[in-house]
Amino acid sequence: MKQVLIEIIPFSVSSQQLHEGAKAPSGNPLVEGILATAEVKNGNGRYYPKELWEREIEKYMDCIKENRATGELDHPDSSIISLKNVSHIIREIRWDGDKVMGKIEILPTVSGNILKALIDNNVRVGVSSRGMGSLKPLGEGTMEVQDDFELLCFDFVSTPSNPGSYMYPVKEGLNEGLKYQHHQYSKVNTLLSEILCANGTCPII
Image 1 (tube, one colour):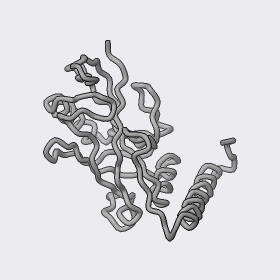
Image 2: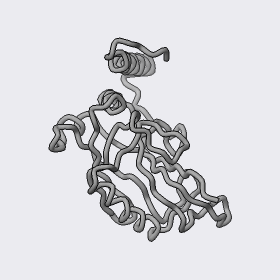
Image 3: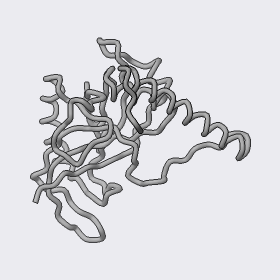
Image 4: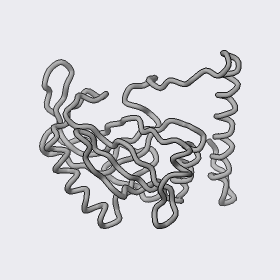
């Protein structure tokens, strides 16, 4: 039976890359990174044959050409892309060995501005593929994604495939590190409040 399949990997974007890197013709920032990996057991215990990803990436090229390869900031367990939550659009996609690489334009939408603010403040994000497909057990906790798999989109999310795997440097001792972390997240909260309240109404969060 087909189900929603969500796979998440860390996506490394620096604030410097965001501001000093390439720009789209629209002037919006472009970021680049790994979107998916074939031929390995991922953090969810799933295995994607490369020919399956190759087929779906080839089909996804049409979405890119037609300017509709959008994705959300956080995603539901749904096969529908919610336009009100769109934060970015895939502009280019290519293979690098068994890795699917993508060039992504961050859009000036509400969700896109939140994503940009998070990256500006060095908050780690993950990129997640969302698709529909069925699974077949291979043994030893591995499930193979079957030929009925259909790629829907790539989203940005907060949770990595391996929870707790992110490491942060401690600055000048424990107290100094905690002070830095507190200041960092306070600034993020302020920016999010400014973005969410821009229309004159502030949601309760």
